[in-house]
Amino acid sequence: MNSHSPLRSWLGVSAITASLFVFLTTELMPIGLLTPLSTSLGISVGVAGLMVTLQGVSAGLGVPFIVAWSRRVNRRVLLSVLLAILALGNLVTAMSPNYAVILTTRLIMGFASGVFWAIGVSMAMRLVPERHASRAAAVVMSGISIATVVGIPLGTILESLTDWRTTFLIWAGLSLVVFAAVTALIPSLPSANAVSVKEVFGLPRRNVPLRMVLVTVVLFVLGHFGAYTFVRPYLEQSASAGPAFITVVLIIFGVGGAIGNFVAGYTVGRSLRGSFLAGCAGLVASMLLLLVAGSTQIGAIAALVLWGLSFGVVQLSQVNMTQAAAPETFEAAMSLNTMAYNTSIALGALFGGLFADHVGVTSVVWFGVALTAASLLLTAATGRGPATRVHDRVTSDV
Image (cartoon, rainbow, N blue to C red; front, side):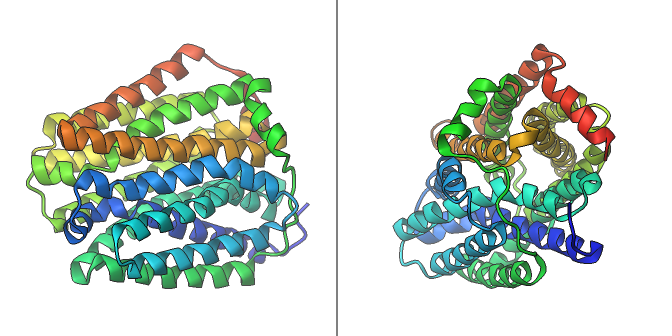
């Protein structure tokens, strides 16, 4: 039971939300900077996309081990260490003499990012009374929308005003500000429900609903990030878009994500599976719309609005699906979710880069259509499962 004042509890949730903001913008900021990065460093757009790929690889593959090995570490202390690594990594990136140093730094930063994703939501849920746990999770997940609305477009704007190195330097300072907020606002949080590495990897074998959630997550994340990583080159090619228009559509995408996250906060309690299905259907439809009408500015805007809305719904739905599938081992389940999610981000960016360099950026959008459609069909085919029913019971008490 939470024993802290409501104000401090929600301030702590806000600090965790800010942490998600800086972690996610750092991880995904290269999406808005691919063209200037590739030009400055003398590499192709596809190779520049490896900044997303390598960070996703380490965030995904390392997290179950690190979370299990740190299962006795106070979660406030652990989050503070992760933010310190993030700040240092952004600083090194800004000062890196070559691309090899940047990739190595991103690989190390990925470990910190992955651990945050595994512990952040559960930390927020522990800070507030149990009846408000789902609301706290929704607030933290809104950091994703804030990152896409403000963070990634702001990075694009800062780069256009200065350069990409200065942009990462500013993010190093911002990471330090969030570090200070976490140390000041979050109370001591001894580790709870963490398990050993062996038990973590045994969860999917014993828990069929969790296994199905992880498969659907892999499919939609591969499709979404495979296409979204290269949305700037696609718009530059298909709609002759300039930096200003790209910044606008990235903001529009983020606003759509924020609205989708807000809507899903209400719909997941009524129909978790239905919310996920609707979101996946929207992802498929938005990418098809981009292919059909993305050569015009109005078409591109419409596609990115629908894309953002749908992603906001799917994102919150999949976190709730994970919690519903493994309520007693949520942190361990989230470490597996993070492994699946971030590895899929990395593979999506990698496959997208291969398609972009060898077939063309339009093929990357078709790749996204195929994978998100597969996630939609798998979820529709599996029917109403135990995870949905568990979630219904949990949210009825909130």
